[in-house]
Image 1 (cartoon, rainbow, N blue to C red):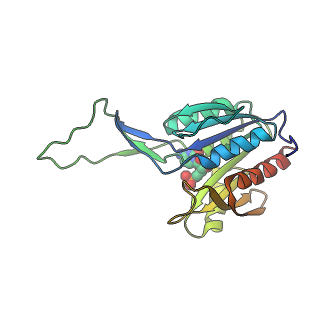
Image 2 (image 1 turned 90 degrees about the vertical axis):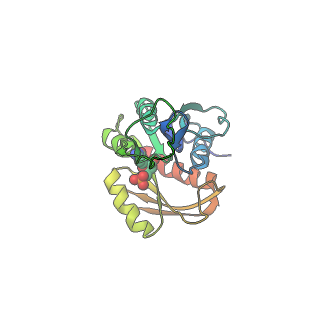
Image 3 (image 1 turned 30 degrees about the vertical axis):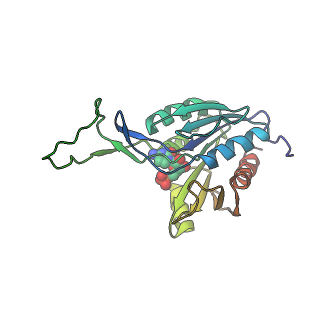
Length: 221
Ligand code: C5P
């Protein structure tokens, strides 16, 4: 059993993957299971934090003692995260947020017409929530953590992303054929804006979550 080193702290975690609707029955989505975000929420609660979990389309039971805010789209996730971040000591963006959404939403189901080519889907940019939270810092000393899945030049790309987003910590995962998404385990390097590099060996998502909270707790001291 761990020390309750996050007691008295409010932390916000986003989890899952956003779905961007095209019409009432279709959406653009991604394969994020939400498992890493849920592990972050459970471990923070176990360490004494008050936890708000903004959950995008994750089909898992609510973790005990955690305040769960369900959302669907990136725009809804932004609203919920910004609201919860107002008094948060730390914000961890583990959700896979769609970079783009369909420019228009058809209120009725889009029909196929026999002699017509399919219509192209026009996309527009979604807000970058991690960058916005990092710039805003609703509370002074607030620690902001992002996640990044990379396929190659993992560390170099991670450093560039950390700087571009302006967060304090970036958890960089190498993704590939059968890695990470939907799996019970994870392997990562946590990059710090202070130049630090913390490798986390392949293991349960709870272990990575606890390493993230160790690094967050140190920055909150
Ligand atoms: O740029 P990229 O999508 O690789 O960055 C991943 C990180 O940024 C994740 O922490 C994700 O939650 C966050 N993100 C965001 N808003 C977006 C896209 C990604 O907050 N529109």
